[in-house]
Image (cartoon, rainbow, N blue to C red; front, side):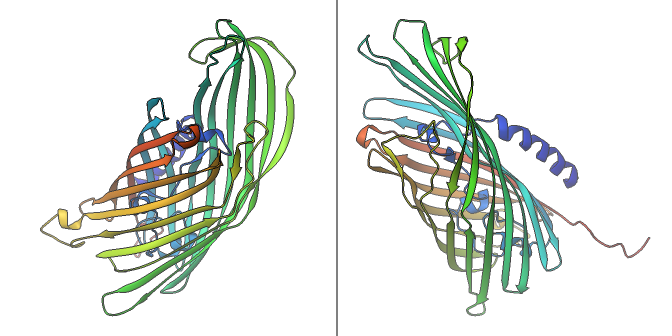
Length: 416
């Protein structure tokens, strides 16, 4: 049954990853868009803390974790996001429902194999600047698309307490931006259409270590490093005369020849470290830090003089609690309760203001009776950006659901 689910879900996410609008943030105009993937829901509900060598849940942030899987694991997650965007003078609400990731993990002795597909970043903005002076031009900008990652990784358990791993990620995607310029009251304007095809490969290596401090308490740690890589951007620019409507629909009247170019974008290296203490299948508390160099992600269509990029950093604290994971009399005692706090500097600086993102995360893991599989529900409340310097502040509330399904494959029959 799980095999049929995996095949169907892979086909679904492959189609949806290209079609879905994963964000409505105006900050997705810059770089490769709004980076949405922050780990599986189980980890995101703990503010990204993923340090335990889990045998039934996948950790997509550190490939060393695949070596700890005991059962074939399939995981799929999605989010419904509600965002209130506001400036000093205006406000607007947006809603989006997206698929976040799909992955499969296979235990193979001391090895573990993981593969899947992740919609990594999204572009989805509609911005307009209406001139009050009739002699000046008004402008409208809208964009769609994003970057996806298909990955394949392997983990190896060096000792019962120490694992290492590596994965390769193929990055691909398309971003389309429409820039309209017109004079108020005149139905004909100009459009600049940019279509960008993105592709590239990057590598990620990791390790996980745990040890007993006493009979009950263990120390857990995790480290992973993503190597710097190049993202090839093949650009196509077309400028045309158009007739437009108020909802951004346009009809081309006359178009110039396309202008093609290629730019190499630098995806910076990233180091993630985390450690904590806990009692396996009972409770855990951990802290984490992620450090990333400044990238070079400005393309010829979204390069702005008031926008620069700085080093990215993220600080998290989170954990979980299970009252009694093997209780036979109380289902609520087998529920996993998760929570966390995080603060993140996105690495983007606009009008000399750093764009920060902070959030509170909560979640529960609901075990399916008689199985190791579970359903996870997560909640996230956060704030991104600021209203200072004529910028936009985003106050968001996300509700996410994921499935972690487990099964036994490759079992040798003892009897024919």
